[in-house]
Length: 386
Image (cartoon, rainbow, N blue to C red; front, top):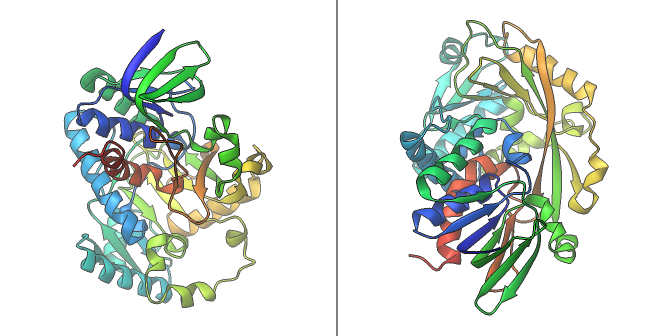
């Protein structure tokens, strides 16, 4: 069987799917080839927070374009987008100073944000501990999605409304460059012919290009997350990010006081060892997702991260969360980990094997927020569109 396309995308996660979305918007014939029935990795194992506010200036622009795209699609088809904004809660004077400095940076960038007093935070976010919060910074344009729902609905929308051909449970084992395009060979015996191929399969591109993978600066990150039982009669709107997030996210690194404030932290603390910062996001069913932690390994040694969930990390995150918000229940119904790939020195991994095969991966924790905006620009570049 030989199938012909303008573009074949290997990997149906959020990065690959938004490349498909923008190619379809340009009138191209597109196929996604995904090894699982639906994506199973980083795209569905995260909070579902779309927070350009946490990114540096360059990636904030991609994130802001992503917000526009998410909302545009949501108006046409329900992909679970909810616009309740994001808030960063400061717990001490240094964090308040960083919020004020980030507010100034965002004013210069033309990105809407609002400083909240302690009382405004307490009024807006039920259960918030008065002894924790000193101020907040609110970003009204930001949204959340249900990650395990969003990608399936987006793929369904593209298949049914935009003409995407989606091949799940289909593993690619070879891409062969031709003079007039690429042959993509699958384990099932199907051959796709494409003018262009984009490989967005996370660290798994090592199966296609092992030498290139071994020479990359990719690393993988393992995160632990928790989900409470549904909170009856309780509503926590939007994304809630706290003091540890303020001292971790890239956006705050551009603040003048960031280096001095970070220098005062205890490098041997438990939260530093396990890369913990505390976030809250309420799901549609009323449960609250809490997390997360970060441990790293070179991508070639990804197995070193193991498959266990550390009980001490979970216990620490719950204890810290309880100091911040008094939820009706901290009974945990689900625990899981996610793994995503990122680059040590670059924004993401991009490599053109030849004129027709493009590897785009290692977007890391920026995927849910930045993929839609970045993919739009990348499709224009690869197909030389204006």
